[in-house]
Length: 326
Image 1 (cartoon, one colour):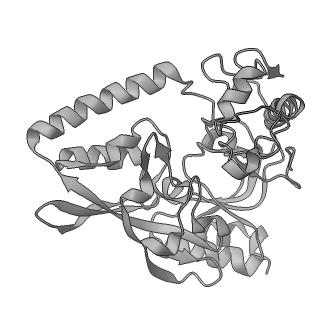
Image 2 (image 1 turned 60 degrees about the vertical axis):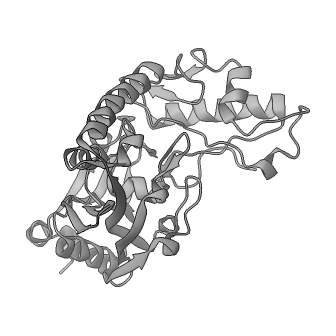
């Protein structure tokens, strides 16, 4: 019996077929997943991986879809969208608490939980969409703060075996927009963070500050149908051949200088008038529109500055990497 065509067997595993993925991404584009599941327990998560392993399927683990672009052809494998979302205090010390959150936890819910328990730290990332799993994966950042500054330990599930492994901070090998999870051999199950305790007065201040940060972000940047920053900033060693005397690492500087902001577009996708490094996919956009626009942005920066912007947005389901590379 071929389980991939047996709907009864698939239903028992909580696996659906041919599910449109556009509804699960911030861009609102992309084709269907051949298989799709949303495990609500760690055991169900392990069964999803076991199914993928036995059927020799490619795997993509999806959070809130805030930093990805899915091919118009979709994903010819299984998309796992974890819904393990329990938040709890696992250790309560005089000056801090350790808070554990499931990978499927919406990060905004973690912020709310901590504010309700007079804990500070995660509110620094207010307004950045995503789940705890996706946020740890890419090590979200805002100004001087990285999520890795708060992470203490975690549980990950091994792709090949479905085994749950307890890991510490060092295991992740965090960097800017980077973690060991990029190897796609392990997936986050839960993360434990150390957040400092505050007074009721400080919590009230933090709540007000969170509202102001959120208001600032939504006024300054596009907040719908975008992945946020499409290209990452340059590493210093990537600027060696830049055709200007004092190059900076900020990719938005170069995109501003080529006049991308609010002017460049392909199909129904355009560069935001608010930020030169943010692409907005208007209704009717396709992922191919976004790809062609991103390539146009890259080519203009190459022609003017001899630099190639590299994506922060993850490309999913493409037969080959669709953008320009060094």
